[in-house]
Length: 174
View 1: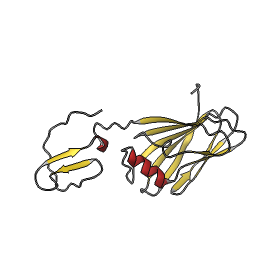
View 2 (view 1 turned 60 degrees about the vertical axis):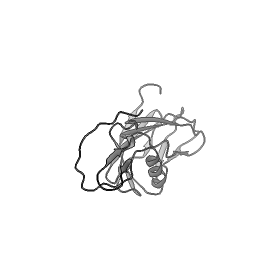
View 3 (view 1 turned 90 degrees about the vertical axis):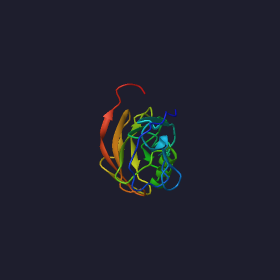
């Protein structure tokens, strides 16, 4: 939802158009417009919940399922599995493109929390697996009826590191 602009005076030594910033005129004195996707008043939610219902073999998480929140993302894997299964992450390049499309503007050094839930309806264990651009550290298995919390650090826009922060029991149906 658009918000009313707040008028203020800023001293700007250098400003470049792009990433939610529009300049009018392009040089000299004029109006600087900061779009909602640039930060203040952003329509991007802090948390988001997504579901993957893959029912056979590896669960391939999409970039859309692994992003959408500026601080925390939940992915619930709900498909019935008949044995241990892989939970494949999307490539970093595809994830960065999805984040940019949603107005999240990933930056090197930034981070977010990624929670992956194993709610497959059977006693099967999922294991998070890497894709191009990822470095995974810590325990990567997710028992049934639990979730694993990762801190994802964007070391660059082509390399992300995910550190497991632990596995937690789901205490209620989701």
